[in-house]
Length: 328
Length: 297
Ligand SMILES: Nc1ncnc2c1ncn2[C@@H]1O[C@H](COP(=O)(O)OP(=O)(O)OP(=O)(O)O)[C@@H](O)[C@H]1O
Ligand SMILES: [Mg+2]
Image 1: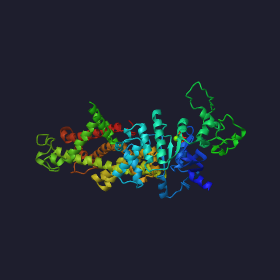
Image 2: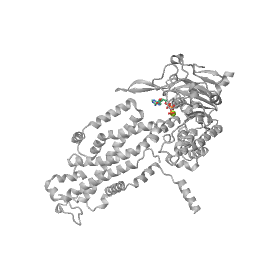
Image 3: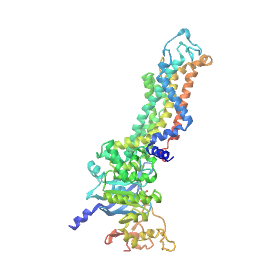
Image 4: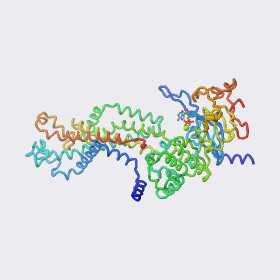
């Protein structure tokens, strides 16, 4: 019974997911290696929560988000949405799945087709899934959605180039909401925006979440943004999750050395309040040739012999607090 | 004052500038391109309305009036058979422009279909199509064209066919390259996430975004086709007499005597070719400048 409820609470379950990109090279374009963008990660996303994912550039956050939505093919592992594996679905079921999970992109320029009007951009999917008829019906529905996202109804006839970055991002949000999805991957939705506009967009996302009972996977490299919006936070390093815990716990008592280093790098508003900043040595290794054992061992201040040979298991050390480290 | 401000704001709220209009606004600022554009329009109108612009029949022979200098009756004089040069020039425009536009149109259709398929599906199909394109691009134009015309006979249809068949690889490459880069844009991923069909992705998302560069390339391509038509007709391999084209009208200039003493029989068609090709090139360059692929402001 308890198990049953727990299953129902989880909207998305990711098990040992891997995603490698082949590196082609040489005269005949043979595969000469792999970029191990996502290496064996497992986590769950609960109904109605916001799971934040943080990590440095190139650590595989976007790849994780896209693979979960079946926008990229997995290399290995499983992803369950409402208890159903999302890969190898028949065409009709995949099409239905598309109406339930959506994505919001980072770049408000590249994410909108410059040749389509707002009405076409937001309404296209409604027509495709026969949820609205072309013409007036779509226009009315699109007006409603964009109004909810903070734009005016007369905007539907306009083209993307007539909007500011923040407004474009609202169009992108409206497009994701058009099909009334339950789960949305937000891939750094505010990173490209002005700081003053960032909070508006974040607040919009939070309002919409409440209104429409949405579940978010919120990707960012900005710890303060993630802290504001998330319930739980996962920290990624070089394709793996190193720590995952409720927000307060992560900020107050981080366990993984990498999380500690990340948190110590957040600028403090009060300069007299000096924090011990942990400076990591060296650079991030290449995901095409990751270090043996624990992937973080090349930069870890507390590295041990064991770390260099044995990959630490990602395990629950405290209720709801997961970590992959030999120290704990 | 206040109400005027309000009105202005209302106007701003309701005018919609489509990407095409944006391009047109930028093009309008380019004087040379606009001159080219206007000349092309005039040429096309003259070709279309040729029968109404001249009292003479296209092939009406008037041996009594042969080789007449330009005069009030025959503004550009007559040729060796006494046919009115201006009339033949206007009808020649029909042929030359038709060959230019239709051959390029065909080329664009082939180029978009093959380039689009290669770019969208990639992999082996892409490799195959692009290798075929390479082969076609390597074929020497004149020998092939001459052989083809020798077998099929000179006619404007064969002409258009040869021009299109030998000219598509360039366009296919442009379309393919555009689609390859468009495919990586996030709005395509958004379309996939929304469950948009492949057909609509190609027709509504990819092709409209390649149109701008296709139009630029086609404009300059029309100029090239007109030049090639003239060259082949000049050599007697293109449009067969008595149908006039600018190219075969130039054939008279092969005669030394005509070249020296009867300028009105070869200068006007030569000039027409020059002006048309020049105008198309200016327009093409202007379009290229007006084209901001990302349409960021
Ligand atoms: N289509 C692809 N082909 C090959 N390699 C890729 C592809 N997409 C991503 N990668 C590689 O996978 C790794 C992870 O990329 P990803 O975009 O997921 O990182 P990210 O954490 O989202 O970074 P950022 O913060 O810069 O967006 C990178 O090393 C990247 O170069
Ligand atoms: Mg990313």
